Image (cartoon, rainbow, N blue to C red; front, side, top):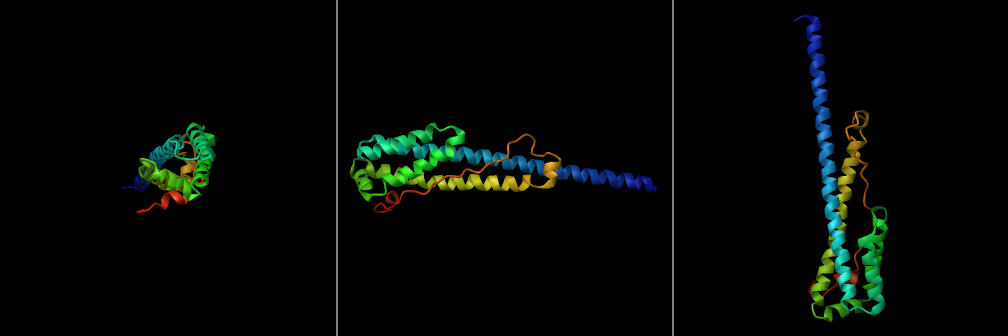
Amino acid sequence: MTGSLWISFWIVAALVLVGVYLSWTAGRLDRLHSRIDAARAALDAQLLRRASVAQELATAGVLDPAASIVLYQAAHAARQAEEEQREVAESELSQALRAVFADSAQATAVREAPGGEESLGELDQAVRRVPMARRFHNDAVRAARAVRRHRVVRWFRLAGHAPFPMAFEMDDEPPTAVADRPGH
C-alpha cells in the first residue's frame, strides 16, 4: 500500500471509531432518559397512593375534625398540584401527616376503629415507599446529568431536544406514630 492509502485507511478507521463511540454515548443517554421517565412514573404512582390513603383516612371519621380537615386539604392539594407546585404540595402533605400523627392518640384512634390497623399499615407502606421512589428517580437524574456534562455530549448535541433532567426535592420524612405500631 502506498502512503496516501494508509493515511486514508487510518482516517476512515478513526472516523468509524468516533462514530461508534458517539452512537454508543447517544444510546446510553437515551437509556438514562428512559430510566428517568420510568422512575418518575413510579414516583408519581407512590405519591398518588400516599395522597389517596391520606384522603381515605381523613374522610373515615376516625380522626378528630381539625386533623381530618388538615389532612384532607393537604392530600387534595398534593393530588391536584400543577407540576411546578408539586414538590411544595407533596412536602406540605408530609408535614400534615407528621402534624396529625405527632400525637400517638390519633394513631391509636385509627388503630381502634374497624379496619384501622390495615389503614395504618397501608399508610405506613405508602409513606415508606415515597422516599425510595424519590431516591431511584434522583439517582437516575444524577447519572443522566453526569453524562450530559461531558463535552462530547454537548458539542455533538447528543441529548437532542430532551429537557435537562431535574431532581424531585421534597420533605418525605414519615410520621413516627404511624410506624410505631404494635407488632411492627
